[in-house]
Image (cartoon, one colour):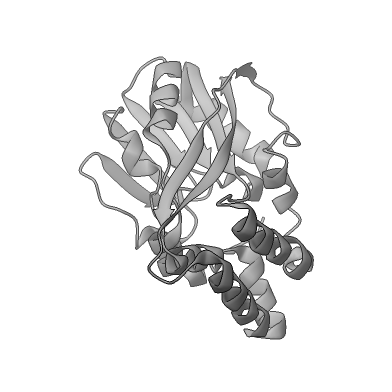
Length: 247
């Protein structure tokens, strides 16, 4: 199966502008795992979650099919990054306590990934799929972002995006499910940081390829009008959705 690479050409922006996950997510995953010897972060990108897992796990291996993403991954003494596809991790049998895929599982060949999870996760280990959808700041900002997301970018979102929008509820998940807490990511961002994040979206790349920068620049101007100035810092939130199960 061909690797559908939506992010390598934006790897620098992804590393700089994607939000980081809350410590409460790592704590929950660590408490669900049977041991803390090895965690596998599949589709790790530039390591937004990978390095956080190293706080609670002795060793973490982050894999991604994009070498460009991994070249910008955050280094950590307990983290090893490997260029590998989701269905062929190169990990030994029954070695992993936690297999997690954050904002990545909707791109996978899930049947093949799940087979790899069953091979590498030790009995009683945990699999977790993590995703986040639309951001929220305040009514005026949200209205501008939502209009751009739906009306302008709508035709350019890959079909897999629907799984993110429904919190992965539409993905098959053939594991004994563990109830997950309500969690959110939260960042204090300037307008420039938010624009940088939006420009990492796969649909923005597709829009620019088809129509150029005109619509993106119009969105930037409209957002600046309601944000309150380049130096203004506002709280940005993303609700997390989790599918967590026992292997």
